[in-house]
Length: 258
Ligand SMILES: NC(=O)c1ccc[n+]([C@@H]2O[C@H](COP(=O)([O-])OP(=O)(O)OC[C@H]3O[C@@H](n4cnc5c(N)ncnc54)[C@H](OP(=O)(O)O)[C@@H]3O)[C@@H](O)[C@H]2O)c1
Image (tube, rainbow, N blue to C red; front, side):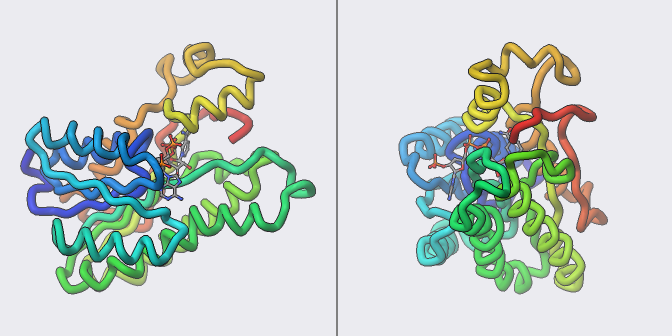
């Protein structure tokens, strides 16, 4: 429980799924965790209760990542309650509607860009001054292994994730002088609500359990796998690691429609 003692982590979209796994892991390492959610107040409260029951420190904060005023209010509240954020995990996100580029309305491209890139960039801009003042900080972005594969019917999602990846890689170079590191974790298919929806869409109603055996190690990725990668990147063991992208997909194979 000592590795991240004294640190303040903000994990966007941590009421469920991947973000929940990250929040639980960082709290277990000793960080105080701001559990962000959009609508699921009860689920966020459960994550906080689980952390507190295990002896950790956490508080829930509502804010849609694509709503700048809500994000500003959240950052102010986290500052007042827990202190300045020195570990930001940008995880909140939604998938696109599975349409071709030709069919996709412009508004869908814009909305995915807001959620996966423009909203997170605003949040990064809000927490950077505190990290710079402390001379230390970590930004970890949760992308997707599919971004490098450019699968059909997913352009709004992969395009927005790719935009954010480029921003994070640039940030990593720019902020080295301030002791701030920025890295990317790119999961393959993860066992979450989103992952289950994607499998249903790709298989005509199938379940993750039906296909897990065909994945590396006989299973798909779990939120705890991603929590482990994030914990490593934010740890002292990764002190010389920045601007990197770690793919966590068991070594290859991803579902075709994401
Ligand atoms: N699952 C996969 O197979 C997979 C694979 C590769 C990458 N990823 C990435 O991993 C991240 C997490 O995905 P997941 O599978 O955990 O999704 P999920 O199970 O659908 O959970 C999404 C989480 O994000 C929150 N959220 C959604 N939109 C938000 C917004 N606009 N502002 C703030 N919070 C928001 C949700 O909160 P509410 O419930 O309150 O809405 C929830 O806590 C995403 O960035 C996704 O692209 C997932």
